[in-house]
Image (cartoon, rainbow, N blue to C red; front, top):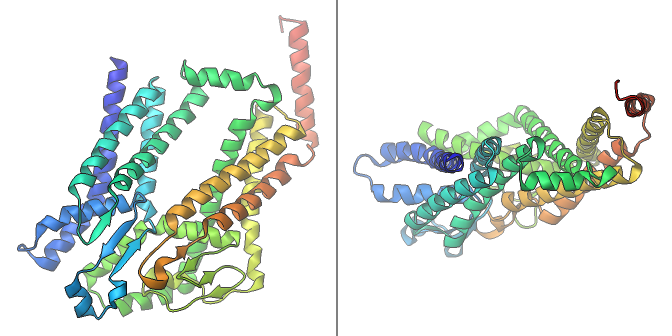
Length: 421
C-alpha cells in the first residue's frame, strides 16, 4: 500500500509540474490574445502555441515557417521566412528539473524512491505525449519524438538525482545501500565518488552565482542601452510586459552565456561574431533589449576574470577538504588528486550540456549561430575548476588537520585497547 501511495503522490507531483509550466505560458498568452484580438479572436491557435513553447522550453528545437502574407507585408526576404529556434529559454527546464528533484527526494524519504521516480516519470511522459499530440502548430513545429523525449528526460534526471542524493545519505535498505557498502569497502578510495559529486555541485553553483553577479553589474553599467532598446521597439505597455516576461524566461540562458564569458571562450550572437574578455567582434545585433547588456569592447586586462572559475574550483576543493577533515577521513595524495579530477570532469560535463541547450539558432541567416561553443566552454571551464580544486585539495595539510588526525588516531587506539572507554 505504501508503494502505491508513493507512486500516486509522485504522479500527482509530475502533473503539478507540467500544469504549472503550461499555466505560466497560457495565462499571459490568454491575456495578450484577449487584449490584442478581442472576444472574436481565433482561440484554436492558443493551445498549440502554448504547448509548442512549453516543448521549446524543455530543449525541443522549433522550426518556424512564416506565412506568405506576413513575409510579403513585412518585406522579409523569402530565404528568411523559414528558420529554426534552438536557443532554449532555460527557466522552464530548470523549474521542471528542480520540481522533479524535490519529488524524487520525497519518494526516497518515504522509502520507495524507485517506485516514486518511475511513477512520476511515467506520469510526466504521458502528459508530455498528450501535449505533443494535441499542440501541433503549423507555423512553428517541433519534432514529435523530441517533444516527448526531452521533457521526459528532464523530469527523469531531476527525480533520479533528488532521490539518489537522499538515498545515498540516509540509506534505502536496498540497492543504494549495497552500492554504498561496496564503495565503503574501497578504503581510502571510498569517499572519492561522493566528494567529487559534491565538489562539482559546489563549483557549478559558484560559477552560476558569479555569473548572476556579473549580469547584475552589467544592468547597472549598461541599463541605459537596455532602456533605449525598449523604447526603440515602440510597443505598448502590454507588449513591454510580454517582452519582459520572455526575457526573464531566458535569464538562466543568459547566465550560461555569461559563465562562458567569465571562463574565457565567450559566446557568439551570429555567424562570425565573438564576445569574450579578450576581444569583442560584433555585427548588427537584433533589437532585443537584453542584448544591450553585451559589452561593446573588450581588453586584454579583462582576462583577469578567468580567475573567477579558478576561485570557484578552489572553493569547491575547500568545501570537500573541510568535509573530509570533519568526517575524520584524511586521504592520501592519490585519492585527493582523483577527487580534483572528478570535480573538473563533472563540471565540464554540466557545462557541455548547458552550452548545448543555451546555444544554437536564434533566427534566420547569420543568427543561426548563437551562444557558447560546446567543446571550448566545457574544456576551459572544467580545466579552470580542476586547477582551483587541485590547489586546495593537494596542498600540504596544515597543523590543525594533522593534530586532529593524530587525536582521532589516539582515540581509536585507546578505544580498541580499553573497550570500557
